Image (cartoon, rainbow, N blue to C red; front, side, top):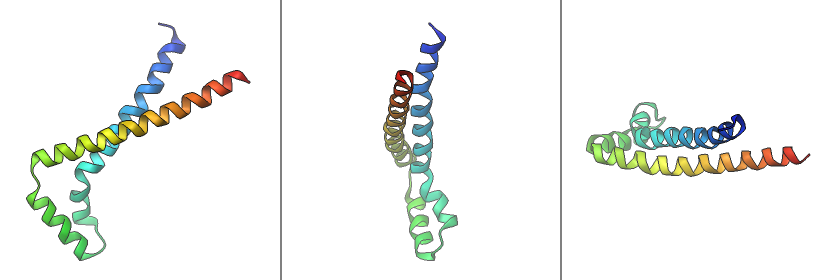
Length: 91
């Protein structure tokens, strides 16, 4: 495998995995973070109630929903950067 092709593969994999993990974790733990950092007591109370009734399966479901959205975002980012690279090669 040539170095250029190897770099191209990493150019696709890294953004997809990065955005999937980042957005998946944000979706999974948003209420846990908002429970302590919300500005208004109403928002803290809502988050506290969600955390109290949260189960492991709902956290996992939210993580995978966020990871799916993050993977799409990472794919679009990789696709966009690949398009810029191909235009740079033509010039």
